[in-house]
Length: 326
Image (cartoon, rainbow, N blue to C red):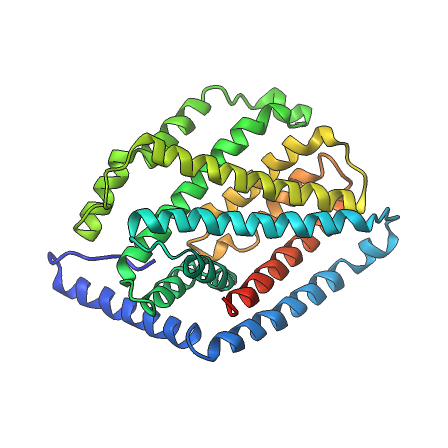
């Protein structure tokens, strides 16, 4: 992430500025002009490679299992995924209006969708830098966009934790977990941490300290609460995508919907927590596979995670393609 620096250490400041300039130039080269279409084509190629690699590595498991394919559920999953990606872009637009005074709906949607492609590059810096460069082309400074991307990640992370906690009573946990793990003492700590991370006054102070100016208007609890609720809705749609995909391969009763939403939220939050490092790659897939084995056999869980990854890659490519036409 591009971070502002203080004047207390000129040598460190100069070094960080050189690093920031390099990332800016690299992102500007990749995500502007005709190279946008080239980048889209490259990610399409990588998607095909990923699909082929995953299928090849699990071919015997896929071949031997008796599947119960129901095509209509895949259609539901795709539709819900597109709605989910639209809602995520709408929340970003709301943040942009409040923090960087950029009320243009289609521009915010376009940039949010296209910059999502950079999430597939290891390291969060590429995703954030691509946004900053794209907004610079419409006259918005890079620093506010960088800070806002960080705030978005905080809101997504906290809302993911909240979604997980709200759905936890509906989970089916193995006996060894329920008998040996007592979450009661840990929950208050999580709640306190979440409150601190999204406290309006703290967010305002951090924004003012780093950017040397605050938001246009003072933040209140109703602001952060609204954004958190919207992101909980986004998490819920993502969980519904997972539920539909499970039913595409094997029937799963509707009583598992809430638990499925929680599994999706927890696995993605774990992945987000490791997003600043390369070790974050694959965290969602591994953790989600483990959780899904509580409701489906292991072969089905493996395939669901593979197809889910491909489905989200496809959704990002579709929305990126749409963004080029906006």
